[in-house]
Image 1 (cartoon, helix red, strand yellow):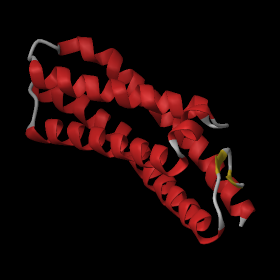
Image 2 (spheres, helix red, strand yellow):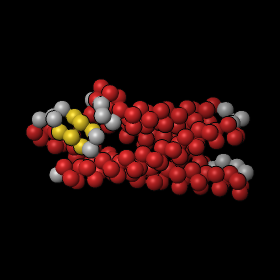
Image 3 (cartoon, helix red, strand yellow):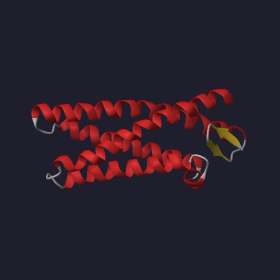
Image 4 (tube, one colour):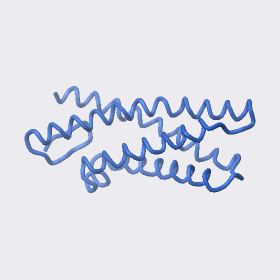
Length: 149
């Protein structure tokens, strides 16, 4: 068994090394997304407050972050194996990520299907900002990975 911080994966030889490399890359990409997402949400709030309207960038950015986080979640689950992802050592973080991504998907679906959302999505956006806390977990995992090497 190889370990990456609190992430484990049954692996052998080169395959295990390849999985660790992919997980490390995903964690670095997730860090970038987790830094950019609150910046984007801040821009959304500012733009709506100043111009009292939605822009195309608002929609494109929201959908793009939703797709990026969904892809990250699915790829990590596939690399680790779904059982290890939801029942392993990092299960609580992974379940939290799954809930946040599900909320993001719900928010984008609601936004696409109705125009009477206004402040109701505020709570959903706040939950997305909480996703930023995951950055600290990823930093810890990267530090553990560096010690593992």
